[in-house]
Image (cartoon, rainbow, N blue to C red; front, top):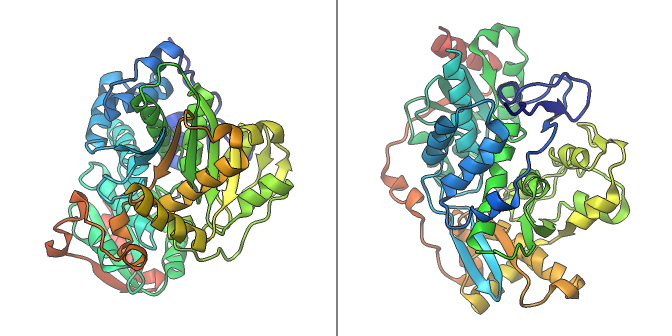
Length: 457
Ligand SMILES: *Cc1c(COP(=O)(O)O)cnc(C)c1O
């Protein structure tokens, strides 16, 4: 019998827990993030056998290495099949350089990959224990729709999303309000910060304990492990039997996407380098250059808006993976192995002007349509090639992740290229669907009454 993998807190002041506990808790009680104590190894035979497999089969293979002792294999396979019922295209751009499009899920962003698997994993454990959970989350647009769609129709889980009524686009709102069933959407008369303050208050209110609240936010370990899968998938699609190491470029904000890649790498995926591209929120590239980490508050507004993060929460995990300790405020308590860190990663900041120029030139030169986040990734890759000529050769394999669908950014694309991108299937017909949501003043007592009224058992 293999031993279960346990999860420790990056602050090192909380007991180790099982996967189930880490998943259902989210944050460790000492304020740290959960990390697997050891990473399972993907041996060469298993790696090579991935070639030709479907996405959900690869997800099953990877997840089973973590969860053999927690979930029966056939149940895990069923979850993966249900979560990943959409395409994951690997698009050739030039020579042996590719774009991995992670935008074909229900909300057309890569967040669907993590949220859909996390929802199914939570449902599995809650069902086993005959427990219910109420997901309460605040959104400025995209996270809320990914969570609402991922948990839509699941048993034992209800979802309440608060959004600032006047601050989301019509499309973003419709991706949440046209669902129904176990998904409840509330437009708050206020700003995103008000929504977040309401959620925070609810989590610290003992009178709501019986509702079993969870936030399902991006720091959950149940989102990171599924995010390692598409790195294996990309590798399998390259039909790379020689085990040539690949360069991955990952446009980054909270660094969850990158953590997925690092997990894959430390499990045995042949990676030459991660190019870690940020927008003008350059705290991580600066850390790589100077060894000094300084958060950016408030974060800088860039067109790759989902990456406007001045203190990525997953930094603590990256530091932990390389033997250091960083607390939740971004203070380095123990230095990581910087030499090993820099060998694995090259970090670079791309400004908005550069992002736009790349989006335009890649379309004109290669007929490949990017959106602002993917453009940051592509620009980072090109800059890496400029600074490392030994890797800028035609035979070098490289994959850049495209994290959202261009149709989510019609204004930016129209400004640069003069046309509106075509809608993906998931967004077609959205305009005709019936919406339903409630509105509420930004008043904690109103929210509390609503939650107790509706969800007490
Ligand atoms: C969230 C997001 C990112 C950043 O991902 P992290 O895991 O936070 O680094 C990049 N692109 C898009 C479109 C996103 O929604």
